[in-house]
Image (cartoon, helix red, strand yellow):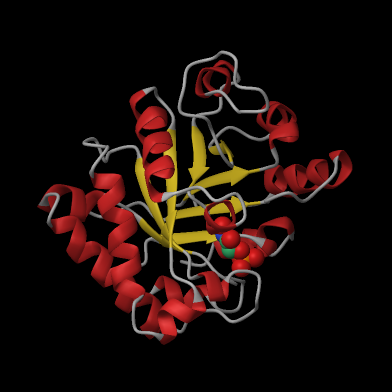
Length: 246
Ligand SMILES: O=C(COP(=O)(O)O)NO
């Protein structure tokens, strides 16, 4: 089947009420490729503002959730409360949470299980450090992360995978099309071990210094089904990335 191209915008911990309002206005007024699925992930404090102001057809995502029902979990973000707010996506396992906040493969997998089994779709992130790449361990690392996920989930239909080499995030050093396609192909091959259907239907996004200049070439790669965009998602050029297939 043809996988619907997917572009996610990860605002990370950036923005203000006014700057987020400007981003929403830009998106609301833009002509967007209707064949592309677009999801934007503002900081948690702005989720409701964005959901209420953003045009229909663009989904809103949290950047993290907790893997328990509502309760005594100070500071955490509830799946149920996201759904109550008409927010049906979350990013999970971003490298910044795996490294800075020490989220293990197992914690990320548990959160992904809880979210997908309770009606929230997940952009599940993976990727290697520069040291791991230089040691030739890229596929080994991504495979380890995928195996931890497979150990906890069985329904892949609410999962979009984002391969984000840590050395390309925020650095301006985008992976070459060959580097990205090589890992995406390896992930696709690993997914065939789950099932041919899962391998065929699961979108695999590339993230790491994507911008309006490099997105076109990357999008032509057979196993790149879209992008998870950081810095450029805060800029008007994000529209050009969404429309990169045109
Ligand atoms: O972390 C990223 C990528 O960030 P940049 O586009 O700023 O490299 N996406 O989740």
